[in-house]
Length: 215
Image 1: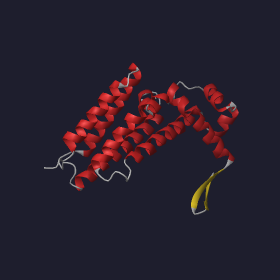
Image 2: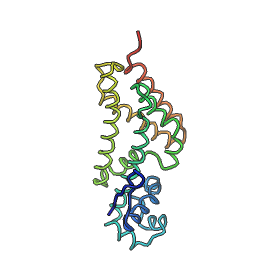
Image 3: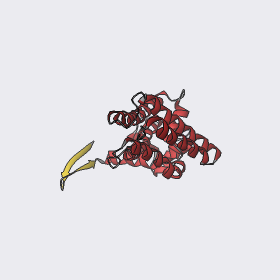
Image 4: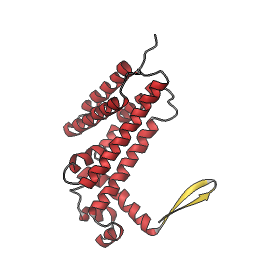
């Protein structure tokens, strides 16, 4: 069980020993699952990465699938937090928020690749038919991601910065398709140019299709 207390005016999370062990397992295997695959990663891989016994793993998780799902949630949450910061309050204009979103990938593609690539895309690829419980989690992550982008576009429309006829959900999904496709091709070919091409296209769409230019 996780407990909360107030210390020096801030909320402090106090974890039980069991929760600390679970978190240790999740954090130590996050890159492993994303790199090797959620299905291909074995229990032996988990014990080697964590330094724990099989009994300890099964004492905290029902089975390997449960570990995989919790690790996916952890990986997706880390990416989500970082992307959310790209839409931060320091960028009041919708155009700047969308550009910051693109900039995140320009600046951080090496880190993304080093950790196995985009956790959403990796999990979606292997969970399509063989791991339905994981597929549900991935679909939820993409829905959240699309909603965040669409909300920025809608706010821009309300402020008169983005054309009113723009379908926010359609463009949000288009941006994700372009970026995820760029990541996939760049990672497969070992060449970041493909991701840059995708990011350039997203930037062009923002500047020439979405934004209302000053007259």
